[in-house]
Image (cartoon, rainbow, N blue to C red; front, side, top):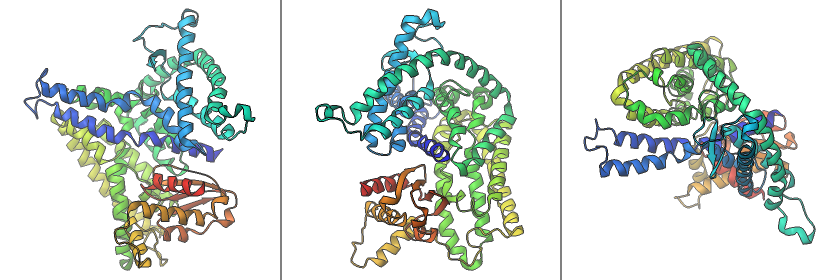
Amino acid sequence: MRNTIQRFGAAMFVPVLLFPAAGILLGLTVVLLDPHLFPFAVEGSTYVKIVGIFQKASMVLFQNMPMLFALGLPIALAKKASGRAVLAAFISYLTFNYFIGGIIDVWSEQLGINYQAGQTGLTEVGGVLTLDTSIVGSIMTAAFTVWMHNRFFDLRLPDWANIFTGTPLIVIFCFPLMLILAILTVLVWPPIQSGIQSLQIIILDSGAIGVWLFTFLERILIPTGLHHFVYGPVYFGPIVTDGGTVNYWISHISEFANSDAPLTELFPQGGFMLIGMGKVFGCSGIAMAIYATAKPENKKMVAGLLIGATLTAVLTGITEPIEFTFIFIAPMLFLVHAILAATMATIMYLFGVSGNFYLGVVDFLFQNWLPLGANHWVTYVIQIAIGLTFTVIYFYVFKFLIVKFNLMTPGRSDAKIKLFTKSDYQKSKREDAHHAESDTNEHDVVTQKAIAFIEGLGGKENIKHITNCATRLRIQVDNPELVEETAYFQSHGAINVVYKGQSLQIIVGLTVPQVREEMNILMK
């Protein structure tokens, strides 16, 4: 069950990875429409009209978030033919909403639903007015469809019925299932919507305490993979605000940019989106502490390990490479990390900081600082000052704990450190392959890594299931005794390996989607 939950949480990250690029484009359009920076950005001008077109186009992902999750989850959850699983999930999601639209069109009065366009609680999907189930509906339909896909995709039918084999059969099986799901949704979702609206008020009234608890839980659950279930319903679901905090911020960013009111008044929900503070300012302090406490002869090697991992955390908000260098060696440090990150976010919120700050500096810049800097620069100066202060706090607290308890963080033991960067791996490959071309491309590196991982896992026959999250391969094997030790995987480019019986995680880095895809191809 735990493995299933972790795979599902990791699958949630597939569509999320698309948001930063769209957010950057949106942030740039807001900046380009700022009359303080561009005096010719006059309402009704050709310039404004053209930039406005780009702004509308940059909203496509955020305005269709439920559809994105319905299409994205099967990519990670399907055990085979993931592309066909995506097609089946897309049809199921539309069928589900068409069933709901038809039911409330006929029985809206009996159900007590005001069936009119623009009514709260309703939305349009595929040209049909239906209940606004946010990402909950898309997750349910995708989950059921992938379950059917994994179970029946390879079912063999008689020769006369072979035309229905594969995806058509899955769609046929899902059709009555979507009807049942639609009927249940029509009956239970309106009361749930009322409860969510009440919950939104309670959460917003929780203020700084709520911000601290949310941030702490999101950080502390990272080792379990369950942190996706903490932020997912808030950022992309209806728990705090209709449509999710990400969509709400994006939809109102121009309005926030043109207002000089405090950000915490304009967007109080943004307190729950400050988890990026620990990623940017916290991980920087952690990296410096690990480097400072390493043995002098190991500092150069530790620096090579930490620079890339820290830049990844600071720029993109992907913290796993640096966090997993100490999380299993010294869990106490991760607890301290979660406490400090929650405290930093809460203090910033009390000083008026709010916004879309759940990833890294790239998003800080394009979705906050640049578009809103003209009217909110003082708040951002305060934010950076508090963040840098906490970087210093992180450094001294982590340095003290590492030395006090003699924690074996990278560089403190006599064992060889084998947490290689990508460039280290490429260099070793060039030295070993004297006849290889000097301009070996990235695809060759990924292929070699995939081959080595499959061999290290005991061969393709021993691999039961494989998926990935942002930086990790999540794998289930039949026989754990056939799996190589950590050193083997590290010597072939892995950052670290976590073993849990028949389940293991290989921390690869940001190239993990390409490695997983190559492994799937090689195992066919």
